[in-house]
Length: 278
Image (cartoon, rainbow, N blue to C red; front, side, top):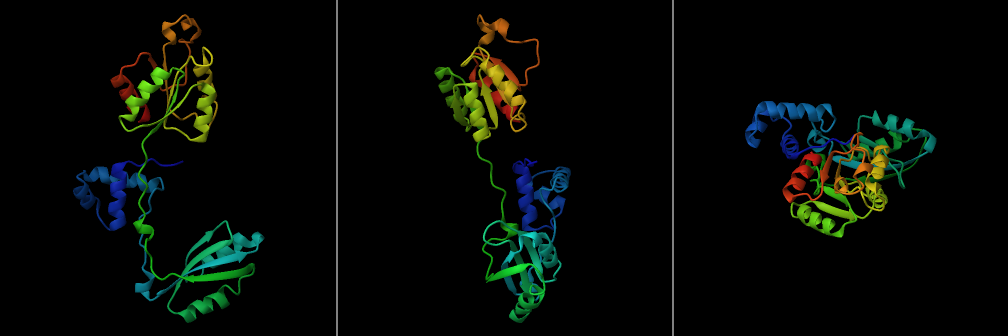
């Protein structure tokens, strides 16, 4: 499950990336938060696996200036076995199983080129299953692990499913004026295709489109699809003011986040969208 982090989480993580020894009190003072807020958020980030607070040794300062990346070709049946044997070698920093021309990537560091040569010929040479190696010296890191920043999220994406072009255009203008990204389709089937191609953050769904209860049938399909069912849905329709009102099952549970009757004031639409996205 992907963890959702907000702006405050990102700021706390950046503070810890700059110096993992910073206390909660120091971080709280820099960010203008309470110590309790910082402590609770760090505890949540750690417990959910979003961050791990640890020391990153600098090999060059610790007498191992020769830093290399080694790609290895390995017999397929021995990949895990070879990887585990390499992982326990003292010089090994990281071991990755990869897909592509190589089978394993190994990052290792050494006091000298002689130690590197011994690692390649003796340590790796003594492991059965390795069929080829290629070594690259890492001269200088332009960007390291601690320099990575969590990508900022793009604007919320809203899928608007409605066959009324006037409603679509008006709603699009209102939503885009607030920074939302809007995609419009004209039927329930088209909405399902769009949801599977590019998962939206919210769906605004009409009821009467290609059929009187098109939107209702679409909601049922979404609810039965494990990949889509947790996407919030706002159903917006005028069906209750038409001759088809008796077809709409108002006495039954409908798996939507909110139901609004058309016409919808811009302020009401935006407030409901904000609540649904939360």
